[in-house]
Length: 196
Image 1 (cartoon, rainbow, N blue to C red):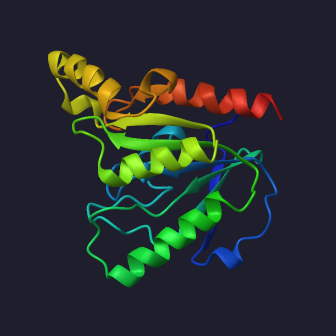
Image 2 (cartoon, rainbow, N blue to C red):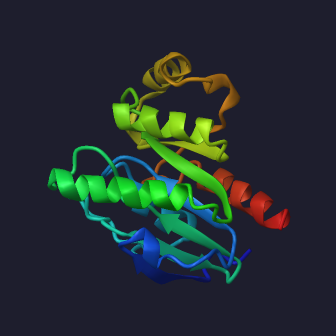
């Protein structure tokens, strides 16, 4: 797998615009500003393939990135506290739900959760949705570098209570600063491609 061979492919603002799947897809989901774009850039050894912003809610479309000509990484709009209108948030929700329930060749969702804090209501709703729709997913615990060792241990214990069926879910601790967890996530992607 050539991780350096990746490029932006296309963006869609409406579900109706998205054509049927051409390749396997891995979607990146999470609240606004949790680090989806940073994660994509890190896995692909790039600095700015996926646009990173300090302002929540900048990803207002579904962005497709083609990786090694074999798979698409799909950056979904974030949910949560983005300072946009209620109507715009509803449009994003419809767009994301439409994408996730459209019978696409969706092999996995990387569901991002900020490791430092308890999952938000939106995080838990998305995790419940993924469980109920039986869409395979991995939880990526972002901003791991911000936690000291003792705090990490405590957060791991808390997550077992905070997230339903946590013991049955693969969770990967990740930092876009140190690159921790990136290799583990690449191996997960490679396993998916190997099954094609």
